[in-house]
Length: 408
Image (cartoon, rainbow, N blue to C red):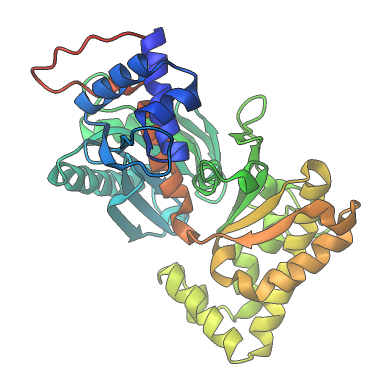
């Protein structure tokens, strides 16, 4: 990457992470001279990525206009395949939601090709929404439940989906009629990693060391260390759900016995809370509706529901304690279904966490419930799709008639 491209990206990321500022403030913050910053801002403006904002107040000397992100020119599209649904979401450069679609689907009972037919339909609808917004998609990132070989864009194994060695990106590209050279890039990633990225708010120092535990039928996680997603040697870090916590316990979908997700996954809660013919255990019904019913029963004091929530919360705390002893995060964010019913489990989780962690006061680790719920993974996917612009703003073409050259 050339020095000028690097500096364009530096300015754009700074505006994202620290907010609007005058050119003079940007120059001081980034260690660049004012002429260089003015040239860089002019080019970013010409590419439709930034615009002038309000007069900056409180500075020394003559006040200048702030520079802020202009979100309307490009969008990142995120998509998700989970056991109970497929979903898409588009974000503009400023992080505003431009389009959102979701379809309840019992994906585990369907062939991968059928599921991706549904997902491609939602992606097409989302791309149409983006075009109607006057923008264009810059990239598509797909989050999926299971082990992902990101380099080959293949889901190597998804135990709860029943998929193995599925070339997700290629199959989607075939259905969308786009290619990496003629359309927009398509990449895939583990959904829990993407949920962690969604929770790692730029500029929030309290979330620079964080674990995100994402609960659905399966349980996964993302590790944010010093502000960066930790992927591990081959990209498989964060498979928290397959820690063995009960060697004499239940058989997991992965084929082993006693995995953490067998005692904290959605099935564990619903099986404990309701009989087999109870609607809350019917996968054909919307998951949010079923969890709302769990919340309703808990609020009415239903003893079976409360006992199920307490038991699962206790096991969540067991696993969280193991992870905290190993990693000492500043915060553990409970996402997915945990966020929907976590208020009933939180006391049990925190009690067990404090019992399990050797360091005083659980090493300072706090437990929070995600405010994004089931949208965390797809929002994180859209965030990653936009990252290509923040890495290289020249991916967005200049407007016709531009003659900007500029210094580094």
